Amino acid sequence: MKLVTAFIKKNMLMDVITALHRVEGLTGASFSEIRGFGQSYGTKGADYSDYRLHIRIEVLCKDSIVEKLVSTLEKKAHTGLRGDGKIIISTVEEVVRISTGERGETAI
Image (cartoon, rainbow, N blue to C red; front, side):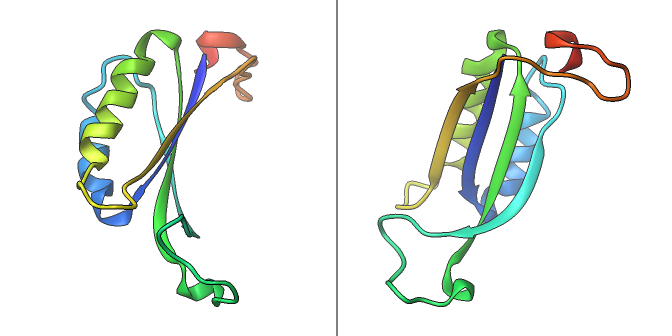
């Protein structure tokens, strides 16, 4: 199992969501608004409100769809401009569905 975390520009969210609905085997995704900076933005002492708003996407998925998921995120979040974001892939040891007690891939 993998946890795929992506940081994208806010204006790309709807295109990404539409594309994620087409990824076969994907059971869901979470989105949150975040503020931050990368190499190309931010100065020391800048106020928190000065930082750019981005979207954090988190998807827990089976290993078998990771490449399709990452490819979809990469294509749909790409603008060709600096600061398009990042995709991070992490290995997940265990998942537990709270409502049923299911564990592992069946809990995704």
